[in-house]
Amino acid sequence: MKKVIVLGSTNVDTILNVQRFPQPGETLAMDGRAVAGGGKGANQAIAAVRSGAQTAFISKVGKEGAADFMLDTFKKDGMNIDHVRCSETAGTGQAYIMVDASGQNSILIYGGANQDVTVDDIHEAEEAIKDADRIVAQFEVPIPAIIEAFKIARANGVQTILNPAPAIKNIPAELLAVTDMIVPNETEAEIIIGIKVTDEASMKANAEAMFKMGIKVVIITVGAKGSFYATPTTTGFVPAFKVQAVDTTAAGDTFIGALSTKLELDYSNIEAAMTYANKASSIAVQTKGAQNSIPYEKDIQL
Image 1 (cartoon, rainbow, N blue to C red):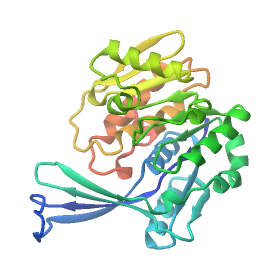
Image 2: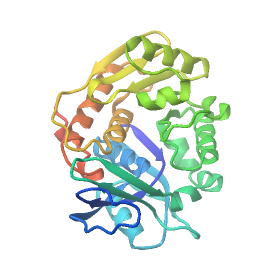
Image 3: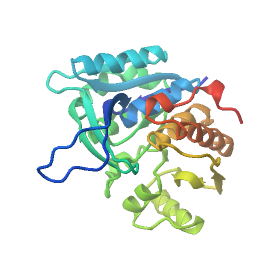
């Protein structure tokens, strides 16, 4: 059983269903409203724990009912939440997602307590980081906290996986220097490197550029097509499972969480681990919503 620690965001998603988006100054009635757990960090941690990893989560929430809602979700899945702290100054992160009748969405994000994750919080979780096999992080919490967590991990032989989302053009060299594996999607890879992902050759070109930044292993996910990988010695493409997608929310997060659970530390089973992660994602996209759609290990039959 892998020991995975995830550093990242916790959001409560409010989904508003409308026939069409309102015009400026217009008031419209909603067709429906739903509340669900979200945040890239929380999604990835839930995917990891549901795929059998011993999973700890470093995050921050507010002190209101939204925080209790999320903490209850984490506890039900058996996640270690010793390092999910309460912010003294901000509320739990929120995402407001307006979805029209055609399935198009518009999203507003309130970072809230996610933006209050500090280097001090990382130091409080230092022993948990040292005890892990690998740590996973994304860009929905402040980068200084990620750098500090990855530095602690690197100093203690703990593998580091960076999901550079939401993408930023200039990832600090200090962070790249302590990143073992990077897992962007095709859009994020293009933003980071500047090479549009159109085929396997362009994916290899992106990976080569990332190797020059100091990264050891690159995985680029390309949605319904599958995922590409590059190590210092080999490259390959693992096709996706063909399914009827209903909602792609959290598909990428499910992939990364599931991957972190099954991938050997020497990457020797990278294709098998990616196949498992692709299967987990293919199940997630067949259900509306984020965390409720993330499958359990028993349901991921290869």
